[in-house]
Image (cartoon, rainbow, N blue to C red; front, side, top):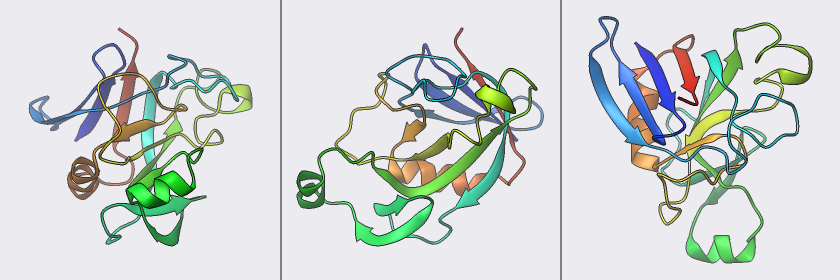
Amino acid sequence: MRIEISIPEQMLTLLDDSGNVKACYPVSTAANGPGCEKNSGCTPLGAHIVRAKVGQGAASNAVFVGRRLTGEICTPALMAEFPERDWILTRILWLSGTELGRNRLGNVDTMQRYIYIHGTPDNIPLGTAASHGCIRMRNADIIELFDLIDTGTPVWISAE
């Protein structure tokens, strides 16, 4: 399996080892566009792998902070109470760049930037660039994807 993410199309595609499409999901990438620099708020480009899977068995809409469950379930009331929170929900696929100097090590390290594929509140629109750098997905979609892939799955993120 491998994952391809198109920033222009705001789409994540899961492909099998023969290149056949297994699933397509709408996503939201960074409002600041593509880029690999630390503190840019951009979605990194190029070759990555899923370094870690976090949240196996967590409830849909379970809230994570620092990759740890908070014990909260995201609701409209909780969102109103914390309007500035960047909601990381349900599951986390933590990405690590594989291209030295582009998205790995130094000032461009995807993993050190804490770039994830993760769930987002269901009322947050997808299909437009709006995240802080991560790739946001519907909660049902991230659960499905999480269960279909393994740690080490290749991920290609493209601005073309």
